[in-house]
Picture 1 (tube, rainbow, N blue to C red):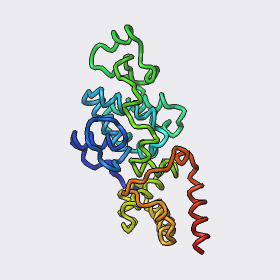
Picture 2 (cartoon, rainbow, N blue to C red):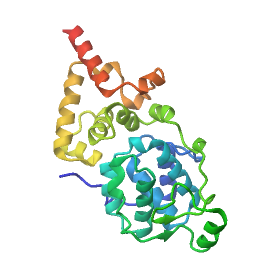
Picture 3 (cartoon, rainbow, N blue to C red):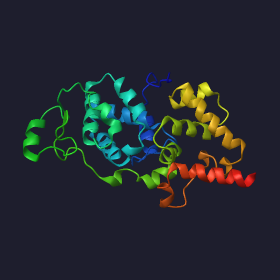
Picture 4 (cartoon, rainbow, N blue to C red):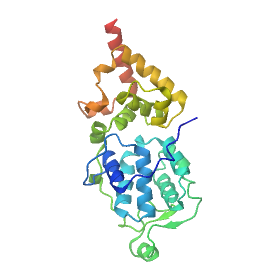
Length: 262
């Protein structure tokens, strides 16, 4: 059984802005360090679709185009399924259609129930005939006139920058976008938390939290984790090649260090 954050209160506008900056969206505000990625994405979609903030929706869509490979799809699907807004679910169904090569997101495709929705409250038909559709949404359940949502990659941090600034994102690059990576991030910040608290913080099952904590604490007891330093110290990889290194290399390095200590 997984612990759920779906009942947590919605963030205030300033809190949401800080969280969006924390996950790599370039708004002019201070960042919330280690902001939760999936809940921030969901609340940004609510702000864009239900409250008409097209700037946020544009930046969210650009962010997904750049970073979707490191989203915890299982968690995002669960959050979207609990979302009562049909417009918000239509947005995520459209994202699943656009990012169809990422098969992990396929479960979002039916989120809207198949009904077609216009992004703009009025004038969508006229704008689509005049300028055409935004190619990212073409053929999906959400009709978006071309040029309504700007798409500039400089509006979001690159993976190389975000991996330096967000410990959870970094761990997903190393281990894959899984609950194991999220548990590891929780433990880097608070290594002595109980298993139940770790599972609650990472919104995962008790079993996943227990297995990951066992492995983390084994490496910590062996002194291997001290080589990387705590996440809160602002770890920065030496170069871009480190970002492409498979997660198993990290385990190999840890095993080698442990062997030398023996």
